[in-house]
Length: 442
Image (tube, rainbow, N blue to C red; front, side, top):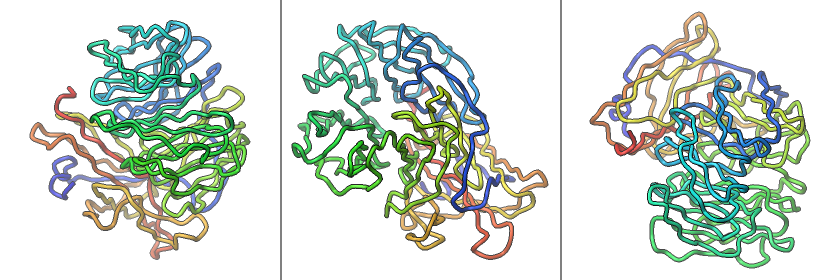
C-alpha cells in the first residue's frame, strides 16, 4: 500500500507507544488466566480482537479478549465442539459437531447459534474456504461445504478423522495433513480454480503430525511432527520437501504469527521456544506456568501475546514484545476507530509500514534473540509517523476507512521507540497485518 493510500486509512495525529521488557531471553508469566474444561484448538478473530475457545465436553464456544485475556461472551454450539473456522467476512463462526454430524453456524454479532449444516457424518477439523465455503474433515471424507446453498463437494475420500486441515489467508488453497503408519501424508487442494490436487512423496515425512501452518503468501506450509525432524517445510504448491526445522523430537504444538515471520513451538513442558522463519534462528524463550497441551499454542491476531492452553485446563496470555501497538487487524469500509501505542513515557517513537512482511534486522540475524522489523525492506517500506509518548507512555491515531478506499487490501505496521540514544536501546513493537475487507463484507 502506498504512503498516501495509508494516510487515508490513518490520518496524521498524536500517537503513543507501550514498552514491556528488555529485548533478551527472559521468563514471562501470563498476567491473566482463564479456565475451561477440555479446550480444543483455538481460533483467532482480528476483527473483534478476540480468540474463540471451543469446549469438546460441554459444546460451549467462549470468546476471550486478546486485550486482557478475560472471557467476553459464551454460546452453546452443540453437544461437543471438535474444530472451528470463520467465514471470509468475519460474520459467522462454524463449529464442527461430531455427535450431531454436521456444523453449527454462530452469528458473531449476536453470538447465537443460527443454523446447522447437516453432513450426515461426524465432523471434526474445519478450515475457512473460498468465499462462502468451509472445508470439513468428516467420516465421509474431506468436504468442501457451501454455507449459503448447502452443497457439498468431496475433495478426498477415506480421510482419517484425526486429520488436520488448514487454508491460506484468502481461502483459495487448503492442505490436508494425515498420519498414516508412522508417516505423514499431505495433500494440497486449489479451492478457487479447477487445478488438480497434489500429494507429498509417500513416506518422505516421518512421525505423527501435531499441527500445520501456512506462510503469509502460502508459498510454504509448515508441518509439525512428534518425530526427530521436528517441523517439515514444504513448498505450498508442489509439496516438495524444502527442509526441516530441528526442534524435535516430541513436539506437541506450533503456532505462527499473523505476519508469518515468527514461530512458537513447545515439547509439552513449560518452555516455549521462538524461531525467526527466515533463518530459523532462535528468538526469545517463554516459560509458561503450566505444561503446554497438544496443539495448545496460538498467537493473538495483533501479535502482542501468545496464548497457551495448559495441562491444568488454563488458558493464559504471555506478552511477546517490548513495545505494543494495537488496533483491529480486520477492518470494513466505513469503519472508524483508533490505533494505540504504549511504551516508555516521553520517549520518541516511530511507526513504519509496508504492503508485505519481511525481515529488516537491527542485530546480526544469527545473534541470540536478534531484533528485527517484520517488514519487507524492498517493497515500499516507509516511515509513516514519528513523535513522543505522553507522560503516561501512550499515544493514539484515529482512523476512518473511507467509502472510496481501495478494498480488499493489506498493510503491515510496526513501531519502535528509542528511550535513549544509540541503536542498542531501540525497542521494537509487535507487527500488525491489517486487512481491509472487500466491499461485499458489510
